Each structure stands twice: as structure tokens, then as C-alpha cells.
Image 1: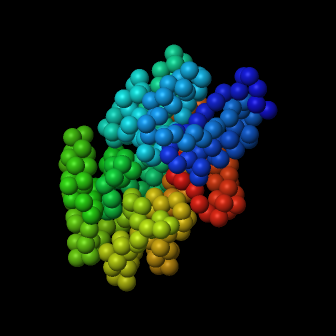
Image 2: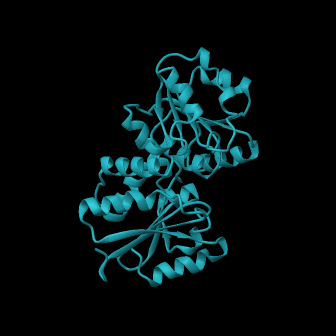
Image 3: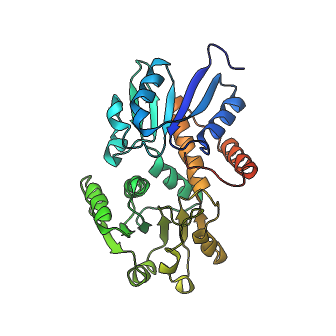
Length: 295
């Protein structure tokens, strides 16, 4: 029961109606008997500073940050942890005991944990990463920290990719290179690459699947893993092609739950329950026809 002692947590974004964080966190609060509530706030971009000030004034205990505020939130915080600082983006804010707002980023760690959960070790393996946006950057850092042998970045916009690669190099990682977003380049690369990740919105409802034609599906064999950050649909065409060939797959829901578990540990200092979050996600998306936002 909500009372005057109930702790408040939140998510800030635009739009926010489809956000999954309130679903999984409230399910976890109920399961653990926590006197807390997680709310979603649809914030106009021009009102972000006022929204953060409001959360401070209301003594919010912590909040998730989703699109389009992962970068814009940074100057409004008191501190940023080392990982989020390197990523240049924040998706979680913890409120310390002194009221300070501390930024974190769980995007990349969420995917790495989801891949490990499938029994796949990343160390000393090459990875092909499609995309160079904010999520891709976080994933790239986390993959390199997990000890991969090489990161090959494939992107439509070469300048964007080179900017991402430069940022990764600045952290001491040298085993990174770019290939163009075309069939010839990807086909020659992918036969020796066991892990392929789509970190773009390609394949989301209403978006094209232009990345599918880059991959020489009929020539692929052996043990391979395909990962997709897209949450809706849960099985994208990209993952469907991989499943049809009995490859290992990691979907957006897998990544989301692992991100939520990372966030729960940062906020509460203890592990969340994966099965509770999976069940809450599955039930809510099923009732809503499958639609939901990452975060």
C-alpha cells in the first residue's frame, strides 16, 4: 500500500507510455515487499532541467533515463561513474545518501550479461557490431572490456562510426576497425566472425530490414551467436533467420531484463530476481500486443 513513507523511483523519457521499467520494477517491489513505487514521466525536451529539479525536490530515490535524454541529462547530474563517463551517456541515476545525483550506464553490460547467460564466452573472439549510435557505443565499450579479440564496426554513416571508434581508442583499445555497410564488405568479414550484433533500430516495427541482405546466410555454419537490441518484435527477421539455422540468439527482451537487473543492483545494493522480471515483461507485452520500449 502506498503511504507517506513510500519511496519513489521514476523513468524520464519522450515518449514513455510503452516503457517497461515501471512494469519490471513494480513487479519486483511487490514480490520483495518493498515499500516503493516506480512511475513513468513523459517529459518535453525543453523541460528536462525542470523535471530533474522536481525529482530532487521530491526526494526521488533514483530514476532511469531513456531516449532522448541519455546525453542531455549529463550536465544536470552531480557525478558520473567512470563507465558512463567513457560512454558519454547515462541511462540510470542513483540518488546517494547526501542527495547527490550519480549517473550510470547499464546498456552495454546488459547485453554482455545476456550473451553470457546463453553460455557464450566473449573473451578472445572477434565481434561484428552493426551500428554506431549511443547504444552501440555502450555495447562496444562493454564488449572490449569483456576481452573480445577484435571489434569490427559496420555502419551506414562512416563518420559516425569513426567517431565511435576514436572514442573507443581513447580508452586504450586498439583492436577496432570499420567496414562499410555493404554486402561485399560484410560477406567477406562474417565468415570468420562467430558473434554478430545488430545495435540499430533496423528490424523494429515500421523500420526496414536492410541489414538482412548483408549477411551470406546460406554460407554460415558452426557455432554462432546473433544478438539484436530491438525489443519489438521479440523475434526480429534478423533473429528469425538465425533461429531457422539453429544459431544461438539473444533478443532485446533478454538484454532489457539484464539491464534491469544491473540497475536494480546499483539502486538497491542487492540482486534482483530474473524470473520475476522475465515474467512481468512477458505478461505485459503479451497484453499490449507485443509493443514496448527498451528501458
